[in-house]
Length: 159
Image 1 (cartoon, rainbow, N blue to C red):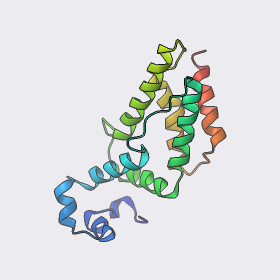
Image 2: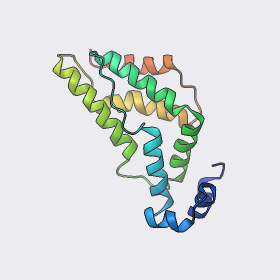
Image 3: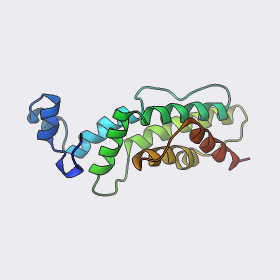
Image 4: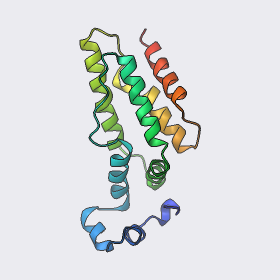
């Protein structure tokens, strides 16, 4: 958007979207709710299922690579940074995190059913997903090798 977080308002968004601000006020309680919904759709590739290659290491590697490529696209970077900038207080629930937790849990469940040793979904979020998002928010390098290293590190924790 180009504005600071304090300048992201329904009238500004409506003008850029070519709609009446009333349309936005009817659907969302506040700008944060709107940004959250946009970010969830943009940052979780809504509807995409977690990879299922038959190997947790390969699943996590593909998943981390998909996420890294997606969240480093310029429009995704803008969504992510706008969502973070618009938050004034700590939240108890983040739909982006919950979507990623569900995907990680599914891969962990399948791995354990195959008899593989697996980290917890929380470990995967903390040691693979969070660092990817952190790097994007703070304009640090994210590349495929970095994503693969994060996967190797989290798997090493349980070996």
